[in-house]
Length: 327
Ligand code: 13P
Ligand code: SF4
Image (cartoon, rainbow, N blue to C red; front, top):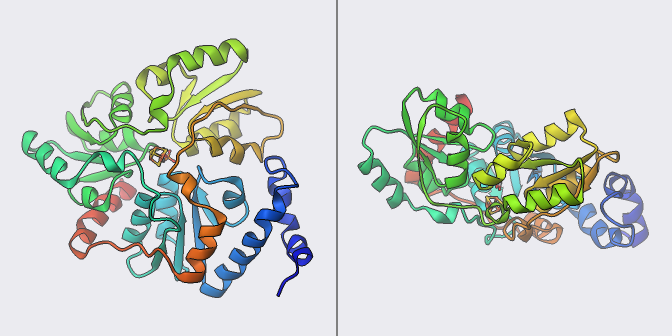
């Protein structure tokens, strides 16, 4: 049995990656799980895919592949391991399963949902199709496999405008995020029919927050996720997916920046940018935060919770995701 000291020695180089955002006193509480997870990954031929909103000890210390929803879907296509642990929310695990039907896909906590995915049912999509015959239905990946199965094509925040325009029609239905739909509508000539779903994290940001931030932090660059209300996006300096925000900081290196999105984003990016001053008013996603090192470890030890897709949904839902990836 490994001694505590041996565990700390084995994980010392990993701690170096996150020392700017995790105080030394907190590391011993993570080190044992990190060490166990690395061994379990080898033993089970498993990989961990982690979304940008995962906490730094997951994102930087145990994840094999990281990114926004689009990158995770793309990377899921190339996984060669037997087991995929999705450190993210349930729709992301379903997407990984759709693209890897023969692999074991695990989500460490079944309660890791999403307010957007909960805002629409397959019956709602069928009603929209009846109401707007012939209008293509673009569904945000933040939906259940059952909703994807009723759609023509998926999109993410990273490719929404490109997908809408690639369809070559004058009108599209875009579900379920009203704000993403309106933010895309502001940038394209295509008419967009929206739904009324909102992200419970991003809907809380207001234009007033931005004005106050600019007053109290002169010169701050404001980046907003496109799930924020359009009035927030209009006041921001840049809007893009979590990967686009990360790329913006990498390439432009703003001296002072605020990311209007989930809290862990800034921590994860800050690790690589000691010269950037991150102002951190942020909102926590309670669903993303259900994933912890402890339940990732348990997922690998006990093979839980396995994500499955009902057989009739598999082909149509997969088609909607694959059409997006091919567009
Ligand atoms: P991204 O695809 O931009 O990472 O967004 C996913 C998400 O859930 C944002 O709230
Ligand atoms: Fe869903 Fe919003 Fe959480 Fe993203 S941040 S998983 S959209 S609730």
